[in-house]
Length: 207
Image 1 (cartoon, helix red, strand yellow):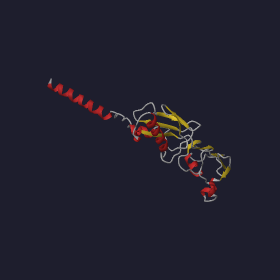
Image 2: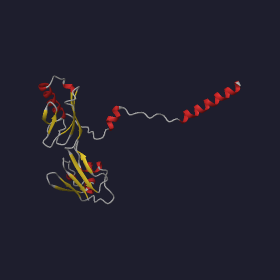
Image 3: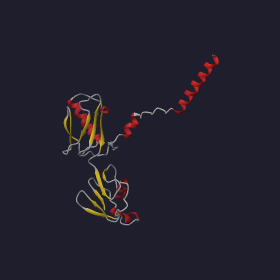
Image 4: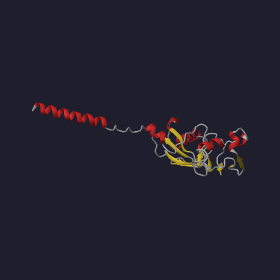
């Protein structure tokens, strides 16, 4: 009887050991920091130098004050509306400067807060974009957060498709000026002056 019990226990231990070998480890949940890094639509901008424009999406946070905090979109007239503070001119200011405006408004109209309790973050840049279309792998609108040349824009868009005409690229500037760009020439060191830095609203057309 004792031998039978021992045999049963050994069998159970073998089964448990095999199960442990094949068990799938539990998937770890991403940390809040990692989730924030992967959040779509977030754009990294310098709060001291980036100039806010119409259609940019801002996140206003005032510590422990839900009435003033929230996500806002800069209107075409360049203003945002915050509860308790009303209309505020945002276009033309940096996030740091707008933070100061909101901080001053809260202190003068509502209550005294510490400067560190007020933050303005640019969540999405819609005011500064260039556009690329045609025989390119990733056509569409691209945020213009840093100085970007035509060559860099083509690289950002994944390069040319098989039948693209790399010698007859057209750049249409927001002002209406049209410029011709020969990719073959530029990469061989010719006509480098045509590799301009793009401005908001510029369009690149790859035939």
